[in-house]
Length: 169
Image (cartoon, rainbow, N blue to C red; front, side, top):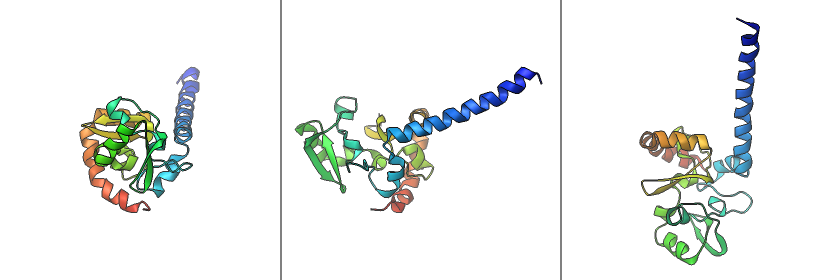
């Protein structure tokens, strides 16, 4: 093995590990530490505010195809947490059918749930698949989901009852 190869191989490994740790730290920082809070609620909430989806409007993902912050004057308590909406129409749509608009798996990342892990998703990393909202802990998980959603959802549906039961109500 050449000297250059001996030097580059450990360097590449070090850079890969550093990038991994940086990605994890960034995800935790973006989520406001939600991965720690995620194991204590059945619906992922912002630990500081108590808001579901960190205060983002769940209906906007469907009506505007984008995350939109909710407003304090458009709040609704459902599932033991407070949800915010961008407008009264979105609040009423959610009230009429929260099972349609609320994120599946209570806002936990479906890729992690499929592995039996209660890892909270973040509202800026999301997908609507077959008319349901999913939020993810990382962009990598969203890409994994996009590549094999059916298999991931099959495993997540099987794992969810146990994962949910282990969460404190």
